[in-house]
Image 1 (tube, rainbow, N blue to C red):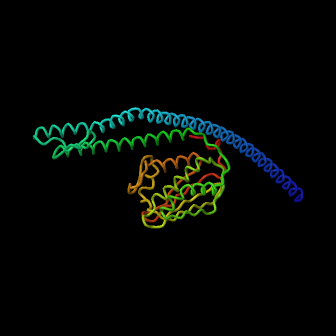
Image 2 (image 1 turned 180 degrees about the vertical axis):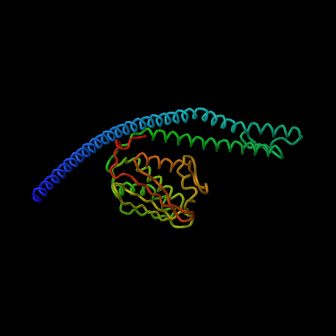
Image 3 (image 1 turned 45 degrees about the vertical axis):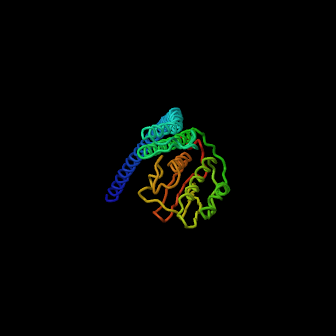
Length: 333
């Protein structure tokens, strides 16, 4: 009958549907298991990658630290060994300077004998400057000028060696993180340059600054150098305005030191951070190590340093440092 056929058809459809559901459930279970297995494999590979990456980083960091230590030892040895010949050069230059008087006195005496001139004045002494004329006088002046150049070069070399030794000693020093009241620290630095600031007619303003955990001596060296440079390179005849300000962002303290001084040509922005390199008019004493040393200290403290400046429009040095620096988290490279 129609009722029986309908019932049979419904039962068949139900059976087919149930079978289809079972098949779909089986496929779903297979896909879930397959996905879970793939995820487990991916997690395992990711863990292995992390372990390998950490091991690689540790290995490279150790290699870099060893290479850096070797460079520092080499620089120290070379600088120390350069002292010995330099001292000899300085000594013999002094002897040449003392012999100069005797040499040119004899030249003057020979010149008088050859020209049958009158004897030396009665008030002349062994230490008196010999009376020279013409080519002999020019020779004496050239000799003195040459000695002056030699002494000047020796002095510069001595200062450079001292700077290298200072840098290598600082590079071997282990940093110690301590809590620092940065405003108090910078106020202390400003107090030490008060006389220099007064002579330059400069006002140093310290705005609100964030306190941080860092190495105190390194921080003192950083800000001392920047403030000293700001005072050194102010515009002549223009009252100086130097401002130190700070803020925090994403776990970092951002310090800015601005001045209204000479400014720095944009093409020299990288040059000023290179060791023994200077930019602009060289009318101030210096060896070109200050900013290079400052940037090295900032990097060892896990931070960054940059400059924004234009000629005759002042400069702004920006230093970004971790608020809570850890020596273990930022190992010495």
